[in-house]
Image (cartoon, rainbow over all chains, first blue to last red; front, side, top):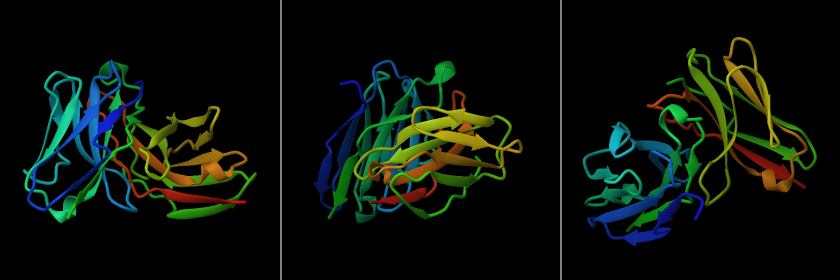
Length: 116
Length: 111
């Protein structure tokens, strides 16, 4: 597809379980972002990749959260020992990045995580 | 990163022009101003971006005064489908660029 693809669209899990959320960015976009959005709030920045490396992970709330982008394309957000407070919509976005950056981020439709 | 302040909500009627103003008093010299729109169950979508004066595209206009401490998003002749949350953001366009979202303005367009 032409847009940012996120899977799964919905994930229900139990407290304490491990979860992986996948993001497939727009082809050719070197920059990739993860955000988290709770009901009624704006998206909260988690981490930003430029290529394969995490250029800024200052938004990750704690060490239970980790994200990778091993080949500079698809990214996976990993959450260990999930807690009820992790329930939110996890949004992925991509952009041209680097010197070609126009400041326009293209968002996917998000993965809704519910921790019971 | 510059903090932004915008109204929590606004109401309008179909066919009216809507102006949403955002304050960003500590905007930096290299910062650009960007507006995004978000519908329920969707990710935010880029609307418009500017640095100074006025920018217009097929969707909206963005007015930025000389001191750049505020900006106004103008939506001409809104329709019901313009009901959404609108976010104002400021940030630099460089290799470390990231966007910090506030709570946005919830626009409700009534028939």
